Length: 443
Image (cartoon, rainbow, N blue to C red; front, side, top):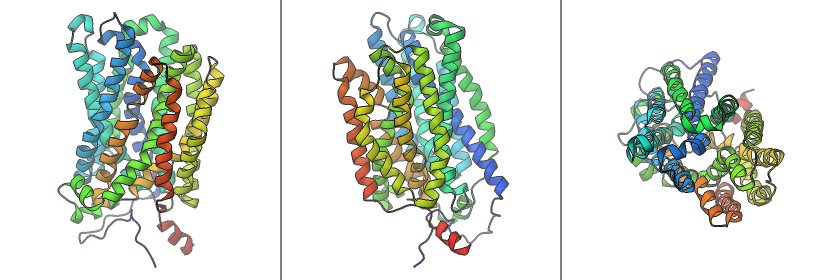
């Protein structure tokens, strides 16, 4: 029996648009990936530079409280991601992938600009943390729709049998954006010093992010709309998010299970672990930064290879490797961290290579769960809600446990979330693009 491809463009009674050429597909892939990378430069700059600007937004008499408050606002931004996932992803399903991606980058760049020009606590009192909070809310709304819109766009743009490869560039570009923010920190630390960074230079990455957002908007406005969206306009629904909850609750719950372990692993190993190594083990900042960059470069190199592999063997095997690997190894990996940068490099490399098994396939695997008319909304709300609960809170949980003398419990927390994801992967059907089998038969 032939089963329909869940990502095939639905039949429409209107004129059929021309299928994109290979050159158009490559152009769309590059433009979407660059735009996504610019967005995540802005988003992760907050976490990477938090240690420098935290004292500027809160009273300086308690540095620890200031850091925790800054990280709490980091988490609050995540809690606005579900709202962005519900609203922006639904907007994308109704008005187009290009329109949704453009709105997302406008919100992100606007948040960066607000942080760059915000007054300090000494200058404006409570207005300073309020503006910081508003900026992070705008960025949270942006990222709530970004993952869903970009995952949907690349999944629909990809030719049959190449969706894993195309989808892997979600985390390739995300990681490159994070690396760029980390390298900027290294450059500013070397040229200006930590004292200047804490005084005023922490504004530089947010100003750069705002300017890059203008370029990202230009790129996204030049994207071609996907064939699947154009052909499916007769099947669009007025309230895509409500339609997901009504018609596809099981698929939405699977997105939650897919994401729980992955988001905690990512925000721990890709974003916060260098800061943790400095604070908990006294690692030199420069060594921690370069260890982080090297480990993330390794992940960037492996992601497209794993995406291509999933187009041959399926998404499910790689997802199982990720979850089972973290379940078994996350506690020993944390135990290997010391004050030596080499230990951080080895630990981050191990964790991020395991995470790559998730990052290479999860975006397209989740996109394959939903029909065209609700695909962005199907990813948007459940994914963003799960990231808010388990990803955005990860640095705060580490800080609180460490402050309470129970930091050793944190890797067990990640292991428990990965166990949940492992159960979901084991009980899920394979989501690999079924058109691959038809194409193989044709050849």
